[in-house]
Length: 583
Image (cartoon, rainbow, N blue to C red; front, side, top):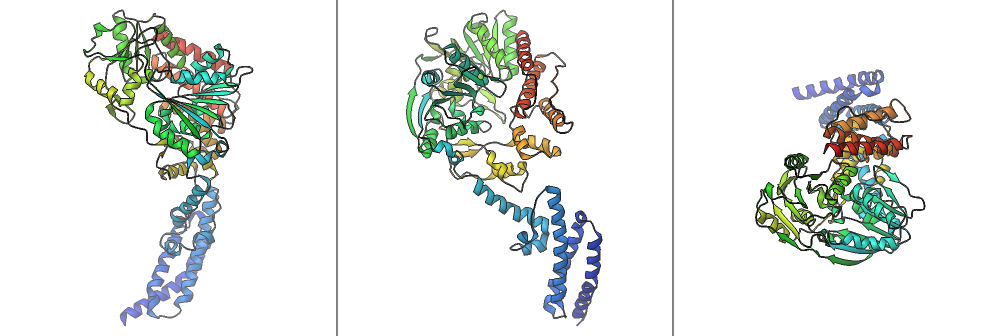
């Protein structure tokens, strides 16, 4: 009996409270109704507890609280829509989610139930499960692929280029700007008019029907007669591999030559077969044999034509200084060097002006040099995540640079301080086959509404690929840029352009310059960017300044801003000369 009186008292209290809460709701601004919504939901739970006790007009009171909750929730949703520029409707969110709505409120249901459901539907509708279906125009063309696969320095790219030169309209895609530049110059010197298109420059040649580009610059909307995609095994690279996958799946070209390592063979067969295209495989072997030297190379044993390979810029410069102090002139190559400086260093080695070459594993890709012997100074490298032993493919890629037909008819491989048996084992080991190609999100993600681009990318990256021979690109760099852009509330199409700019987002100096440029254009409303400046004159500062000039160029290009292109080219030439002199 006492329990029934307490329940009746509670019910009477809830009747008196309802008009007070309605009055409070009318006086409270929309953005501050969170607490009131929580109070009303709690009272509804109390009413449900009392509902089975037969204490009078429970139903009418319950409906009154539901009506009040709806009014409060609709105003909260209206405020959310205004703040986030969205158009969600109360009547579309609550049905089917009523229990969750009572437990956690309208915004919680929106974010945890309704939005994910809509996004999943849009992902399914706008992003095909099979990456080849992103490129319907390429699917209309009957394409034939020629796979030039094998060891380093075996003539794969050379043979493909002979076919490219015979075409009336062709494309060469390189992994590095220096390779795009090398083949641009080669084609033009042999009478094939060719443009150069990279993230750092555009050189248009009058009457050119061919283009030499970095792979990210591939124009998949244009028709070509013949195309070459070089170092195709890089389709497995988590940061850049999507550019190779995009080119393979999306080029509108009846004859495509793929050059790279044999480890990519089965993956390429799967992708090409899935596209319904034809293929022909040509496997290459070395014409110049490799000979492993059993005895470790001491510093005094280094000879003209040797290339010493280290795995950090610091170690390369230490070795360069050591041999320079002993009168052994040397060229140096590492990842931070501008392409123009690499060419100067290569030229000094090729001409004999410098006796030896000291390089990171950047030597393993691209330019063929007259190297007598490759000397590994280490057998481990830091790959951005951990220090690990070299893979068999990396060892072969580097060691394969030894030997040159007509100059060194045998290529030698040795170690300086490490056990040569590891190198021997890696040279004999069959490389692990590439099992997955990397795919990027594609601009279709911009057509998906509801969520900011950053959240869409994060969600995209967690969705498993329907085909088990594809995997998602690492989008952490994109997320970092989008985080830095958040305060400026830019349209997604602009965010997409800016996040795709080619610069090292992990460099604080470059990221700071990037944000400065964003503020100059979108906050200060300037019509052009300020030029970067060089404030100190050490090697690292020059290299960083070169990258700042590149960012000035690529940012201006991406947004079609007016800028001094001639200054960019002249400044890069001067910086490169200064860096070369320092080396």
